[in-house]
Length: 81
Image 1 (cartoon, rainbow, N blue to C red):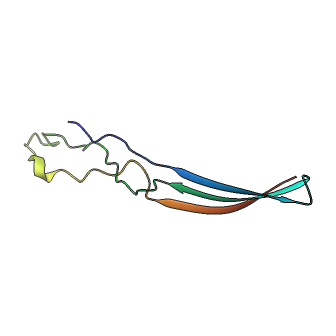
Image 2 (image 1 turned 135 degrees about the vertical axis):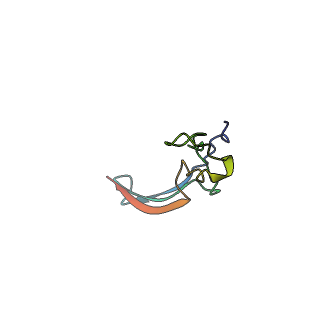
Image 3 (image 1 turned 180 degrees about the horizontal axis):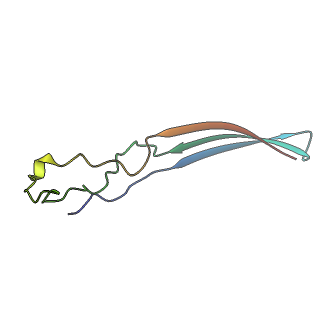
């Protein structure tokens, strides 16, 4: 069995501001993980024979779970001194 390739696009933006000359800096941050919200499915974990020795049809398999998380966006402020 082949599963689709793992694709994940992470993105970050940073904006620096000087406060009190060069001694204190403030940084605004935006970080996005899995920006395009692509579903990365894992391989199906289904066997052809169940515990009693009976055949299990392929369409009775459980849906494959996702391997990566959904889109996450974070905002933050960082002070550097």
